[in-house]
Image (cartoon, helix red, strand yellow):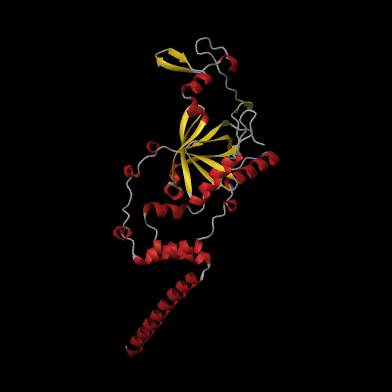
Length: 305
């Protein structure tokens, strides 16, 4: 069983639900170490006293706030807890909103909330299930505030299977406005896009549409890096990365010289759908007739001369 990183209560109205907080993410990054290239010895960092240059153990390190130049006040974990006992021990639900109203950009990090014992008393599982099912039936999520470590977070409490999940949210002031960017207007017709281009783009989206299956998508780059590492371990050889495919096409796209119609046709053709084949047949048939007529007229003119 994973270790909880926080214990407290979910609070909504007068209801208190003792819970424990567990990470919902599984770190899976390739871990590298820094080495001295001269002898391949790992690099080590030490915590040292700025004045003496001597190493300092964790037992001798405290948390300090600089209220003036070189003047500090020491703040302990207990001080932080006592600053607002309720905030540091409570997932305080303030409102309930429709899940669809929360833009994806606001979501930050997910955690599981599980029933937890409170002293010698067992957790009121009934209250946990009550909140979970009420959220599921209404399609609402609870918007809450919670203090984790030394920071207050905005969070969304929502059901997921048998669990309640708490997604940390970004505050509105933490997101930049897109008004700072030079973006095309929403009216695509006014930006040089024709009806045919839009229709073909919509067809491509329809052909590629499928059900959301998260397990389908893998971190393929991580697998490629691990294969490279395994190969280097076995052979001891170094390798030079190959040039990215499609470099010329990417360059053309950046300069705006790529024919959108051609790219859309190519994409539709790769899907092998009926719509793509119909488009290809119509495209191939029309020029052939014209070329044949033109050739007949040209041949007839030469004979007459």
